[in-house]
Length: 58
Ligand code: FES
Figure 1 (cartoon, rainbow, N blue to C red):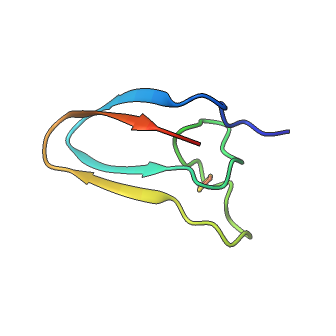
Figure 2 (figure 1 turned 60 degrees about the horizontal axis):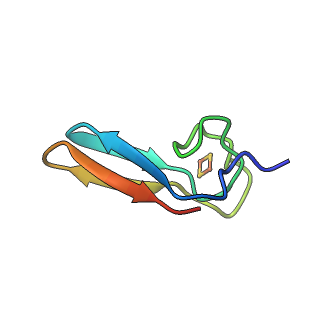
């Protein structure tokens, strides 16, 4: 069962480092929750210098 929303997700992120899921296993989509361990996937790392709203497309 996939936990990724098939529609793009708009998220407001604070300044700092954010880890977004690329494996579709996260129970906290669109954020990485470590469920990719044991797969070939790695989270997408976003380093933001200021708060920003981003669109995450699965
Ligand atoms: S849980 Fe999907 S990349 Fe980490």
